Structures are given as structure tokens and as C-alpha cells.
Length: 209
Image (cartoon, rainbow, N blue to C red; front, side, top):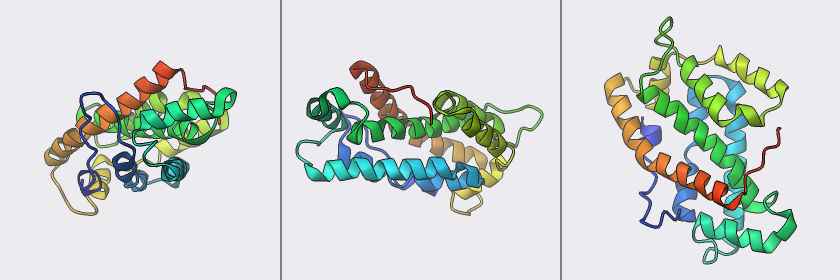
């Protein structure tokens, strides 16, 4: 659980603006989360998240004052790129990053809600499947979808996943779920706000990879 709890996301202010620097600092600790899922087939999502964080940070570093919040960054790029937007820059990187974050959000929420395969209650396949279906499947080609279907069979037991998330320490499941629930409060609010921004600005693209 240390993997999540040591780097909490900030509570959003009343105007729901997401400050760029704290956001980038928090998400930079999330890629190892996919190592806890036990299959190298999740490596592309990990690499994608890492790459998109790097791209957003590179844009932010060019003008931290102008890009203080994610909203300011996306709005500035809309002005800068005109007809090319939103297929460019930090806007495109954040579009894909938010999908990886949604995967984590749905997966953890499903665990907290106690959703499981009654025939295999200690497996996390049902939770991973739900997260993939909601967050990523529609953006993946048939070939990539088949790869992830194969990955589901390599998903670890829930107990092994929670131990990996706790950096190898044996922890009680109830305590883990309470900590995940706590982590999800600010994390979910942040992810939902980014989605709302993309919907409002009509910045989402529907192509497959």
C-alpha cells in the first residue's frame, strides 16, 4: 500500500483547477503500479504512462507560469496550435495519460467495492477486466485487445497483488482496502476533473492504437 499512500494526490481547490507540478509529481510514482499486476503484458501501459508524463513535463518546463494548471496548459495549446489541436503537445499526452489513470481508478474502486468472480474470489481478473473494458478497450485494435485478454490469465492472486502494492510486506486485506479507499478520494476527483475538462473542450479523440 506504500506505493499509493506515500504519494497522495492533492485535494482539489474550490475551482477544481489541477495544479500541474503537484500533479506531475504524484503521477510520476504510479508507473510501478503495473508491475504489481504480475504480467509483462501490462508493460506497454506502464511505458505509455511514463512517456506521456515526460511529454507533459517537457511542455510545462518551457513556461511554468503560463502552464500552472492543466486547464491553462490545454487552453493555451488550443490557441497555439489552431487546427492541429488536440492532436499535439501536452494535450495529446494528457489525453492518453488520463486513460491509464482511469484504468487504475476503476480497478482500485472495483476492489474496494468487493467485486469478484464468485468462483475464484481470490483472483483479480474480474477487476482488471472491468478496468480495461471501461478505460482502454475501445481505443485498442483487435490485436492489442487479444494481448490484454491473454494478460488477464496471468493476473496475480489478490493477496499477492496487495503484498506487491505494500512493497512486499504482509498486510491485512481490510487495512489495505481502507488505505486504497483513502487514496481514491483525491485521485478519483483529479481524474474525473480531467475527463470533464476534455469533454467540455471537445478535446477527446477516438482513434485506435
